[in-house]
Image 1: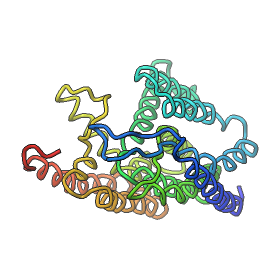
Image 2: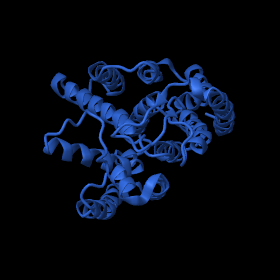
Image 3: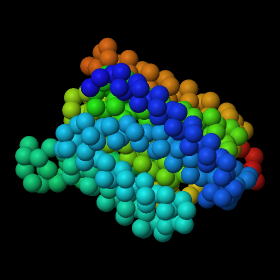
Image 4: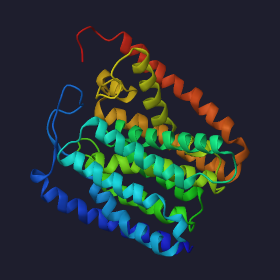
Amino acid sequence: MDSTLTLALAALAAAIATAALALLLRRADGLPQATPNPRSLHARPVPRVGGLAIWAGALPAIIVFAVTVPQEALGWIPAWAILLLVSLRDDVRGLAIPVRLAAHGACALWFAFWIVPTGSAGPAMQAAHVLAAGLLVAWSLNLYNFMDGNDGLAAVMTIVGFAAYGIAGAAGTTLSLVALPLAFATLPFFFVNRPPARMFMGDVGAVPLGFLAAAFGLAGVLHGLWGAWFPVLVFLPFIADATLTLLRRAWRRERWWEGHRSHYYQRLHQLGAGHAGTLAVYAALILGTGVTAVACARVAPEWGWRVLLVWCVVLVLPFAAIDYHWARKPTGTP
């Protein structure tokens, strides 16, 4: 695959996404709005379907991918398209939690059946591999949605994460053909999503992006582009935040599937960092893990698991600091 084509598609993605965002902003008052509630970090309604501009920019790359690669490489596209449509419906009209989760689970399992190699294990082991892959994908697409609560956070995660996929996969591979344009398509969105946000990504952006983060990560592992440590390290700050928060809520027997303000990034925001400070901290963290992951993948992949372990230890420090100050915040503060 010609790397020049990938770069051209990336430039086109940024241009189309910019035009689509301009159109959405002109019609902002008529778009679905994210209204403030006790669990949100915002004080005013904000349009919530900015993810449409990202997909408008990435669509040419997805089309080129679809017409240039073998048909057996297209199994992720139906699940991505269904998630996009279901999530748009959720943004516009709202969906019951069981319906939304059922759609997420079905698409995750579809992808898992497609991506997991057949014939390499017995039926029981094959089923276990499919279930494990499906759970990873389902967790990733919801994880992405969890992180879309602070201005700029999900946008930075997308830019750094998919750029890392494209660079580590070597420009010109079929994975880079979509990953790099997707990162470039998110750049214009970042400038309207950074504090103070004029538009949110919404479920239509976050859920399909979370799906592709897991789908491309697994595809890279199974096709030998990188080790299993790589996608985890790239998105580690957000994986750690969401996973630890879920485990804590489950341990306390809280309704973990309902909206809340107990993620580490939400607590950091409420402790006084605000949107800008929280974005700065998490952007620095994912830039650190993303750059480290790419460097390790290109230079010393055998060090991958050890580097991942080191970053896990590093992340304990800010998370522990947030827990410390949260436990000592004045009674009655949010």
